[in-house]
Length: 264
Image 1 (tube, helix red, strand yellow):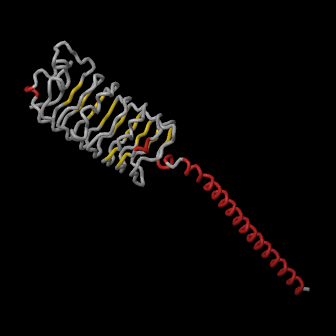
Image 2: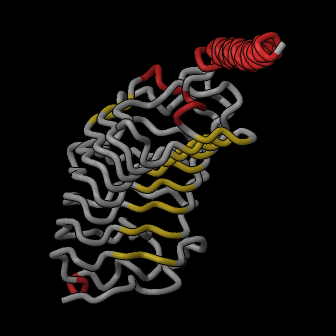
Image 3: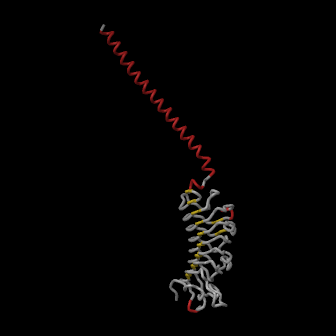
């Protein structure tokens, strides 16, 4: 009788142990199934994102927000202007490694109002890269390596090319003459030896730290009349040039004030 009870006890223990083992095995299988399901969900989501990445690659590298694209200090290094969404109005692509602006970089982008490419390594801009941007009001190419300027759109209000390597040969004397809305012109810290023709619309012109040695009575004024007043011009900088202003006493008589800065 005792032997039978022992057998029954051992059988119960084995059954109980096997049931727990089976449960653990079942739970492990369920866990693997859940993990596989989670993996499939994640894979499907990743695959669903791929078409959008292909459609708008710029917005994966940059920040795109309501017509503005911010591509500043992009990593990995950005060496060319990225493909922009068609509705882009404001582009800020500062502090990258862009070396050249091609005619096709902004083709058809008539919505552009501001382009800031300062702090790059630009050595060349093809002549038609900006000329067809009929709504472009502000263009910043400062802190690059340009030796000449392309044709600029007549819509510009502000143009900044400070800290480049611009020469008089690379900047046509009439480069700004037809820009009748241009109010702010910054050409400081370049290699200019002469002042280009300046439109009547200018409020501010910075030409400091160039190699300008001389000006005429018609550079800023109209030398043949003492009644002409340049009413818009309020700020001129010529400091840091080898020019001696005392040699040109009638060159600024039409201005509200003399050039600012320190001079010899």
